[in-house]
Length: 336
Image 1: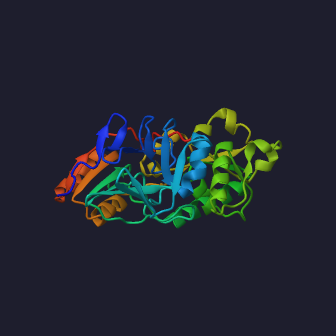
Image 2: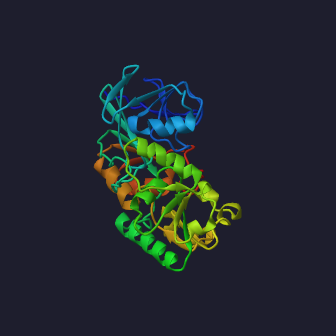
Image 3: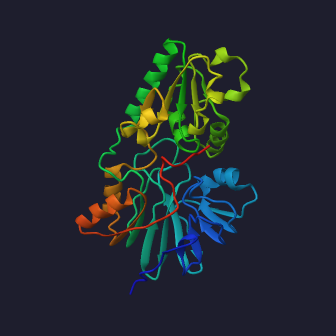
């Protein structure tokens, strides 16, 4: 008989009692298995961390060089108190992983955040099969239907060219970890120079040290002459959209890259000139297709439009359950 309570929700987060470890805990615990390095999934103060090899540099940058971290390659199995744990690509950002746990014939997979479209800055999502699938639902509504990223990058580069012809600086806001690097990788460096906010530049270095190739960039703060920014691209986190930061650019056009740009009115809320629909999460079809392909008998749905996804899955005959967590949706995240 399979163990039907391999994972449970506690005050500390998603807990595996047989293995005595947490997955992306929301408070300091003794042993934390980490899906990826975004702040709502990787928190400081844990006694021990287990994460993918590709995420090591970012985790040490964000949580401290001296954290006790065991890094493992994708697919490598680790035994935690008799429970088999392995990490598999989630396609979200560099080092992101789905956590597969197996104990006494029961297999659970915790997705973390994921997207199924392949991009140049992280390992491609790997479909897994399991008895119980714990999935995010950040963009869990049919209205979220992504265009191919190649089309989005073409739009961004054309916007840059238009601004350049007018002598303007193109300032593109994107979350500093993951989204910014994906955007930079899609830029046509032949158009002009690419500058970055310090938070983005620090993460760029981690990506490059992990073997990810990015176009050459330069930290904005190292430039004294405002004229150097005319016709250039600047990539910065949303938190930098302040007069104190943007006043250094004599004439600028601002844009925001996010899946939330799919929603009418969100661009106005951000007070930007352009909104580019680019997300590091799966859209509605990606979520539903992944859940079905997992062949899971039971589905736990976490942060996002969880109630709507659960309702849909139940209508399809699946055993689905809404789970409350302390993970943030993309719109809530303030990656500085």
